[in-house]
Length: 71
Image (cartoon, rainbow, N blue to C red; front, top):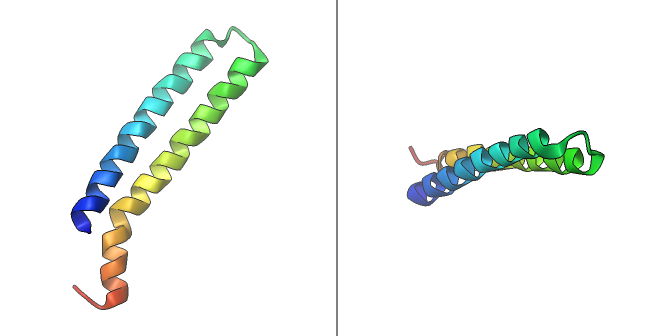
């Protein structure tokens, strides 16, 4: 379970970085167009969600062990 949580965490961190770079690219190429800026905002929100999921996946094994009474 710990290894799976670690891999999922790495996957979501990588996705978050990709989403952030993509959002930055969209902001830079938007040229003031409202629709493109909106799309960049959505990508940034997806990046934040990926970061939250990555943090949760990284800490999930510890949480499960604490609930089950393991060390």
